[in-house]
Image (cartoon, rainbow, N blue to C red; front, side):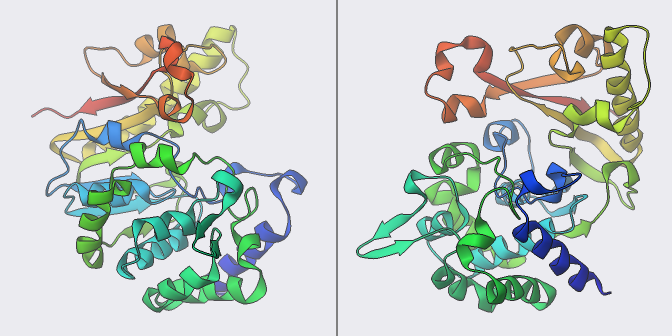
Amino acid sequence: MSKIKDDIKRANYLIKIPSFFRENDDIFDMIYPFTTENINGMFSHFSFKDKDCLSVLGSSDQIFDMYLRGAKSVTAFDINPLTEYLFHLKKAALDANITKEEYLDYFCYRGTDNYTIFGNRLIKPFDIRIFDKIAPNLKGNSYKFWNDLYNKYNFSTIRESARLFNSDEYFRDTLEHTVAYLDDDNFEKLKEVSKNIKITFINKDIKELVLAKNYDLMYFSNIIQYASSMFLKNTICETAYLQRKLPLEAFKNYIMSFKDNLNDNGIIIIGYIYTIFDEYYSNGIFNKEIRDEVFPLDEFNYYYFKSIDYYENPYTNMDPKREKDACLVYKKTV
């Protein structure tokens, strides 16, 4: 079976069977509709101008923000082959010159009553009327993929949460703070350069990733919080402390193997850490003692910014421990 047929078959399975009914359900089988990170706050700490970048593909928002900030090229990797189709759908929407409101109406599922009213029109997520504006800009297999789904299902079924798309999604008001290209002016700027946006897509698990070129910046999103399921999964350690520390150490050693593919003064954003000051001990990356031992501050650094919870939850700013997210960074010096 061809790749496009395999991918359509995979999408059909996800749409037909909600995640809570699936056997061996994996959150990475579904597509993240938008980033769950404050990439606007984080990326503000770095320069992307004329940089060659590597990033997790995920929702594609990281890629669009990188290009908005002047990236020269982006190589994107993801274990989920379906993420590439969302990238092309979002890019086609930008190329279709729709408004930011139409873009958010189309892609956002989580909102007030889950629809927007324009006059006497009801616009819902993945509305066929907006898809008809986008579709002429879809090419090849991306057109075949989305057109096949629209021919088989009602648009609301395609976009329903916890089927093809992951339910982990923030309100659109939050996204306008945490995703730079969703600012009104930035959205127009991104549309101006969207014709030149492209990615080299690598459909691989991070543990199978082989890089063929050097980069100025690498971004590994929040994969670090899954270190315990990636490394030493079935190993029983002598203490709970080691049980949490050793997988994080193995993750660090693996990620640092990519420094040979960094240009001079290149940066690896090793991991995104949610509410970094709100510690808990079941996961090594959220334990400061373990973090500091595995990632000593004479070699690694942290950048802090408003947490995504700060924008999503009006009560977060009452709890200082939940006000900041952070990213863990390595910089290659000459």
